[in-house]
Length: 395
Ligand SMILES: N[C@@H](CCC[C@H](NC(=O)CCC(=O)O)C(=O)O)C(=O)O
Ligand SMILES: [Zn+2]
Ligand SMILES: [Zn+2]
Image 1 (spheres, rainbow, N blue to C red):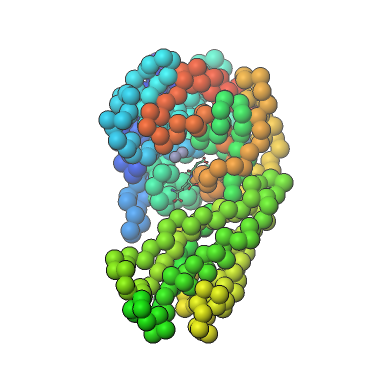
Image 2 (tube, helix red, strand yellow; image 1 turned 60 degrees about the horizontal axis):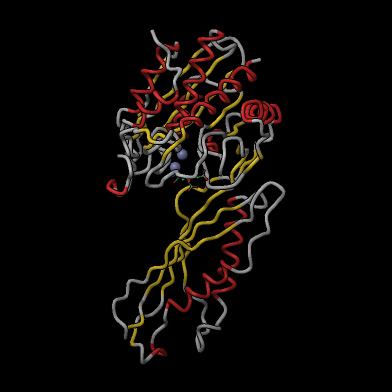
């Protein structure tokens, strides 16, 4: 039986599966077909929760004597957007000028394709790894992330699975392969402020209470001063207001209600609880200020609703894992990668509760864009990095 040693062939098969989140789209079936000849046992649990789409996931395991390495990632992809705007169709895996085009090429079917190719080459050259390898692949990373990695980890752990280390194949390099591995991520939390006023006539403001005035004071208090200036390991905390909604079509009516939603990316000077407390303090102080509400003595009538689950900030401190992966990257690219914690959250935030986790994948420049694409040379180089890592880790 032929082994899936060619990362470009693996990736083409995956891209041709239109697995726009939360659809499986055939991608997990294609992946199962690649893993079976390598001796993996494959399970595909579906997780469900009210109010969220059902999602199919994959857990594949190759058992051996020695440490257990988990490769984690996702086969779901973001929608292609305007398909006419693509130079090559988003689910065709066409190659032009040495690059393969397609949704998921770098985020992150490409990482999965390379890891499978690396495993296949390892098995072909050296036989089965001197330990256990599992692939923990979700179809719910680009979606709500409710029926994906977190439930898959719980499900596998409940069956007695334990892991010694994990590598996540998300794109981590800003410009060139070898730029950076990710050893942590900032936390994330979102909230909505609802300000209630009194609706009335614009020409009779003393009879009304404009909630927009109150909301502006509250939002200003969240934007200044900055939360911190960054830490040794992380970028500064940033808060972005993502939408302000009043929905008032009339120009002569003071509205009765105004809302603002924000998202905070916080570093390790905070926890979800301490950043929430800071936000509450700032809002309470600002609610008592009357600068924008002359004549009003009562505080702004507001409610703060936290949305969804907070993502925790985390930093991996396992030197052996970081040094092994960095060494494998250097051995193939000639460059020692920076240890980065920049960017958004990833499913590593769930894995860190089970074992040390680091991330390394392709160059992320075109992820989520029209014409997402990957140089074939990068696929080959990432495969060699993963193959080297497998050899180094199990050594
Ligand atoms: N949909 C999920 C998580 C959203 C995760 C998203 N992460 C990225 O965009 C990764 C980009 C990078 O690697 O820097 C985010 O940070 O928002 C959820 O809703 O929880
Ligand atoms: Zn991704
Ligand atoms: Zn993504």
